[in-house]
Image (cartoon, rainbow, N blue to C red; front, side, top):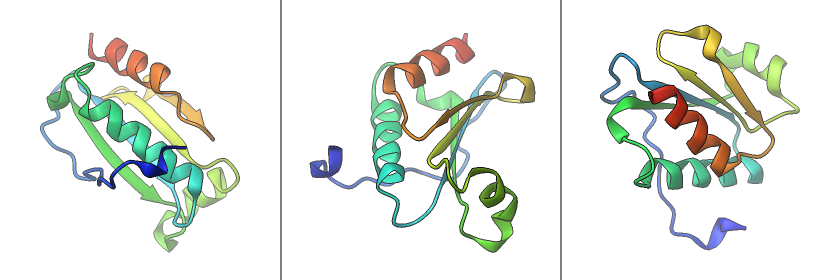
Amino acid sequence: MRSCLPRRLIQTATTGVSKGGVKLTLFSKPQCGLCEEAKEIIEDVLESDAIPKHNISMNIVNINQLNNKKWWDLYCFDIPVLHIEKDNDKESLFKMMHRIDEDVLVDKIQTYLK
């Protein structure tokens, strides 16, 4: 388990996303060990040299918040869930549930940035 790594925070604001970028949305909730592991894997990927940082936005959705009831109803038993999609292309949506596979994440981001 990756819990021995130093704690880092994922930026939740959209930063520098340009046309042709990739949008990541992590559906999570507090006190979720798999969610914390998913955040660490995503942080590792975003900090790696495998992908350019300037074309990726990241958002974390807490499904426990009242304004996120839609996501609670959809994913309450499947978190963490990561949506990966090309900017402005809803049909490109790719989902990973329960565990985030680092290699699949890198591959999907690289494919979408081409």
